Length: 439
Image (cartoon, rainbow, N blue to C red):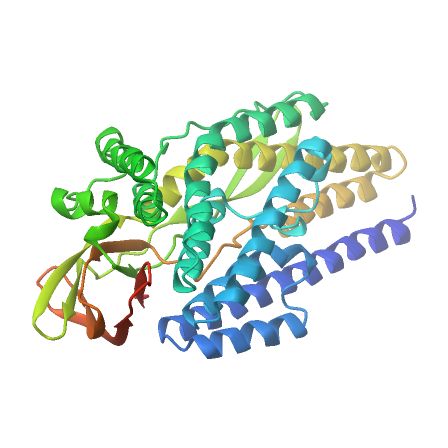
């Protein structure tokens, strides 16, 4: 290999990396704009931005899951329930397809420039919580049976989580020819979702299945008891929780969402293996929590009746725990990819060095620069997902009512209010009032 051809090869590598990097940063900036409009509750504008970004190619084919999650959430709070369910369903199907593909391809599908080159297959907590909003979409449309199907999928996905990643770890280990990496899954510290069982219980009750509603109620209590590290807050009033077993005890579901989903940040790891003269650099994503100012939510009915809307789930805390199951595989994959790059650099530079010492040194230097530049953690995530879920059910007389939701801080000061007019009609199964303070 001559000096000129080697130089061109490295320039080509750096150019391709720079193009991919620019695309990644474009997406980061686009999602920042989404967060701004979503926080301002300008959901129509959020939908418009997403459509504009898709038309401009900022969301590429490999970002389809992410696009569908964002659009599904924006349309949900923009009262476009059919379209929201369609996008969330598409995201769910794509996540399943990409999981199947990752099992069949093994390690070869991961050893690319960096994880941003891969199709985004969604985080497991995103796959779980999309069913919450699909379920709420159907409640808004008075389709209790369809809403129940979605709520039940939350428990099913959580039950499959550890087994899923043991399968992925096994597939990666079988295709790892270097044998330098330990492939294993983390432990699933979340087996049950209080929010999932709460929704399933009240929907079973309204669907005429009281025994199933009772079972979901008991599973909800178990989730509180068996997972104190996840459900570290004071559990809701027992009498209020028991209402979900009796369909005649409620006709209005109050839900409030606050806070934000965890955000990913990049951590760079650099090391040198002197015996093999191998320099390794790999980048790892880690989840960081936002601190929400919201401490409690209350509903004021007709300016006279004040009732608590109980914290049911800290979705951000659950997300961080669920992420731990996948984390060891992310780390091992990053190490394996970095090792492959380093071995490739050494092999090429030594081959060149046999013909030209100076050119061999240059190749080694460029290889290390290439490792530095090509490594970027995958920081893509569902930006518009809330961080906390509040809920309660109540029975009101038929007719018109004013429902004001108040979001309060630790001192009881009102941070945000949202007022809605509802009309409870004879024959309606369940009315839903849903609000969001995405602080």
